[in-house]
Amino acid sequence: MNATDLLRPAFLLAAWTLVITTWMFVTRIPTMAKLRIDPQDARDTSRLNDLLPHEVQRVARNYNHLFEQPTLYYAVVLMIATIGAVDELHVACSWAFLGLRVAHSCVQATVDIVPIRFGLFLLAWIVLAVMILRALAGLF
Image 1 (cartoon, helix red, strand yellow):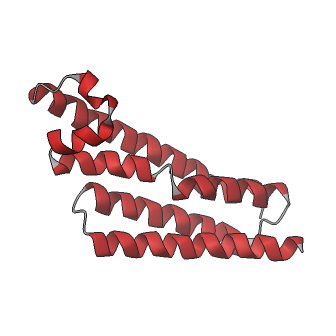
Image 2 (cartoon, helix red, strand yellow):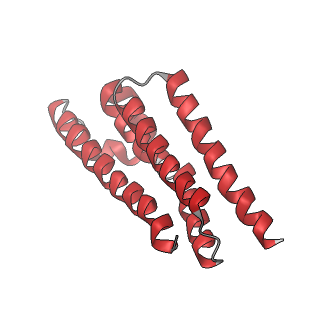
Image 3 (cartoon, helix red, strand yellow):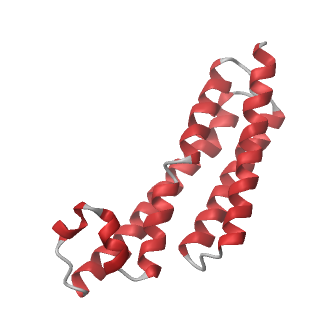
Protein backbone atom coordinates (compact mmCIF):
# COMPACT_ATOMS: atom_id res chain seq x y z
CA MET A 1 0.00 0.00 0.00
CA ASN A 2 1.22 3.45 -0.84
CA ALA A 3 -0.12 7.00 -0.77
CA THR A 4 -1.54 6.70 -4.28
CA ASP A 5 -3.79 3.85 -3.13
CA LEU A 6 -5.20 6.10 -0.40
CA LEU A 7 -5.51 9.17 -2.61
CA ARG A 8 -7.32 7.56 -5.57
CA PRO A 9 -10.73 7.68 -3.86
CA ALA A 10 -10.06 11.27 -2.76
CA PHE A 11 -9.39 12.30 -6.35
CA LEU A 12 -12.55 10.47 -7.44
CA LEU A 13 -14.55 12.36 -4.80
CA ALA A 14 -13.12 15.61 -6.18
CA ALA A 15 -14.18 14.48 -9.66
CA TRP A 16 -17.63 13.59 -8.28
CA THR A 17 -17.86 17.16 -6.98
CA LEU A 18 -17.30 18.33 -10.57
CA VAL A 19 -20.19 16.10 -11.67
CA ILE A 20 -22.49 17.61 -9.04
CA THR A 21 -21.32 21.11 -9.95
CA THR A 22 -22.22 20.47 -13.58
CA TRP A 23 -25.56 18.96 -12.57
CA MET A 24 -26.28 22.04 -10.46
CA PHE A 25 -25.51 24.38 -13.36
CA VAL A 26 -27.57 22.46 -15.92
CA THR A 27 -30.59 22.42 -13.61
CA ARG A 28 -30.34 25.79 -11.89
CA ILE A 29 -29.44 28.13 -14.76
CA PRO A 30 -32.17 27.01 -17.21
CA THR A 31 -34.76 27.02 -14.40
CA MET A 32 -33.77 30.55 -13.41
CA ALA A 33 -34.08 31.63 -17.04
CA LYS A 34 -37.45 29.89 -17.43
CA LEU A 35 -38.79 31.50 -14.25
CA ARG A 36 -37.23 34.85 -15.21
CA ILE A 37 -35.24 35.08 -12.00
CA ASP A 38 -32.70 37.87 -12.17
CA PRO A 39 -29.22 36.43 -11.40
CA GLN A 40 -28.71 39.34 -9.01
CA ASP A 41 -31.52 37.85 -6.90
CA ALA A 42 -29.16 34.92 -6.23
CA ARG A 43 -26.66 37.09 -4.35
CA ASP A 44 -28.39 35.85 -1.21
CA THR A 45 -28.81 32.18 -2.08
CA SER A 46 -31.30 31.68 0.74
CA ARG A 47 -33.77 33.69 -1.38
CA LEU A 48 -33.51 31.03 -4.06
CA ASN A 49 -35.16 28.59 -1.66
CA ASP A 50 -38.40 30.49 -2.19
CA LEU A 51 -37.91 31.02 -5.92
CA LEU A 52 -36.69 27.66 -7.23
CA PRO A 53 -38.42 24.27 -7.14
CA HIS A 54 -37.20 21.73 -4.59
CA GLU A 55 -35.85 19.38 -7.28
CA VAL A 56 -33.49 22.14 -8.44
CA GLN A 57 -32.50 23.21 -4.93
CA ARG A 58 -31.64 19.73 -3.67
CA VAL A 59 -28.78 19.42 -6.19
CA ALA A 60 -27.39 22.77 -5.02
CA ARG A 61 -27.72 21.69 -1.40
CA ASN A 62 -25.75 18.56 -2.17
CA TYR A 63 -23.08 20.68 -3.85
CA ASN A 64 -22.77 22.61 -0.58
CA HIS A 65 -22.62 19.40 1.45
CA LEU A 66 -19.66 18.24 -0.63
CA PHE A 67 -17.68 21.11 0.90
CA GLU A 68 -18.49 20.18 4.49
CA GLN A 69 -17.66 16.65 5.72
CA PRO A 70 -15.54 15.77 2.66
CA THR A 71 -13.26 18.74 3.36
CA LEU A 72 -12.11 17.06 6.57
CA TYR A 73 -11.75 13.77 4.67
CA TYR A 74 -9.37 15.39 2.17
CA ALA A 75 -7.24 16.74 5.02
CA VAL A 76 -7.24 13.38 6.82
CA VAL A 77 -6.12 11.39 3.78
CA LEU A 78 -3.35 13.90 3.12
CA MET A 79 -2.20 13.69 6.75
CA ILE A 80 -2.29 9.88 6.70
CA ALA A 81 -0.25 9.86 3.50
CA THR A 82 2.20 12.41 4.93
CA ILE A 83 2.90 10.48 8.12
CA GLY A 84 3.27 7.23 6.20
CA ALA A 85 0.32 5.50 7.86
CA VAL A 86 -1.19 4.13 4.66
CA ASP A 87 -2.37 0.55 5.15
CA GLU A 88 -5.13 -1.71 3.88
CA LEU A 89 -7.69 -0.52 6.43
CA HIS A 90 -7.09 3.17 5.72
CA VAL A 91 -7.36 2.50 1.99
CA ALA A 92 -10.57 0.49 2.50
CA CYS A 93 -11.97 3.33 4.62
CA SER A 94 -11.06 5.85 1.95
CA TRP A 95 -12.95 3.82 -0.68
CA ALA A 96 -15.87 3.35 1.72
CA PHE A 97 -16.03 7.10 2.35
CA LEU A 98 -16.12 7.75 -1.40
CA GLY A 99 -18.93 5.23 -1.89
CA LEU A 100 -20.96 6.60 0.99
CA ARG A 101 -20.62 10.19 -0.19
CA VAL A 102 -21.58 9.31 -3.78
CA ALA A 103 -24.58 7.39 -2.46
CA HIS A 104 -25.47 10.37 -0.23
CA SER A 105 -25.31 12.66 -3.27
CA CYS A 106 -27.50 10.36 -5.34
CA VAL A 107 -30.13 10.17 -2.61
CA GLN A 108 -30.11 13.89 -1.86
CA ALA A 109 -30.11 15.04 -5.47
CA THR A 110 -32.91 12.70 -6.54
CA VAL A 111 -35.41 11.35 -3.99
CA ASP A 112 -34.09 13.28 -0.95
CA ILE A 113 -35.29 10.81 1.68
CA VAL A 114 -33.80 12.27 4.85
CA PRO A 115 -33.55 9.07 6.96
CA ILE A 116 -31.56 7.37 4.18
CA ARG A 117 -29.42 10.46 3.68
CA PHE A 118 -28.76 10.71 7.40
CA GLY A 119 -27.81 7.04 7.61
CA LEU A 120 -25.26 7.48 4.81
CA PHE A 121 -23.97 10.67 6.44
CA LEU A 122 -23.57 8.88 9.78
CA LEU A 123 -21.81 5.89 8.23
CA ALA A 124 -19.42 8.25 6.44
CA TRP A 125 -18.65 9.91 9.80
CA ILE A 126 -17.95 6.52 11.36
CA VAL A 127 -15.55 5.65 8.54
CA LEU A 128 -13.86 9.03 8.87
CA ALA A 129 -13.61 8.62 12.65
CA VAL A 130 -11.90 5.24 12.20
CA MET A 131 -9.35 6.88 9.92
CA ILE A 132 -8.72 9.75 12.31
CA LEU A 133 -8.48 7.63 15.45
CA ARG A 134 -6.21 5.01 13.84
CA ALA A 135 -3.87 7.69 12.52
CA LEU A 136 -3.83 9.40 15.93
CA ALA A 137 -3.08 6.12 17.69
CA GLY A 138 -0.10 5.63 15.40
CA LEU A 139 1.27 9.04 16.27
CA PHE A 140 1.16 8.66 20.03
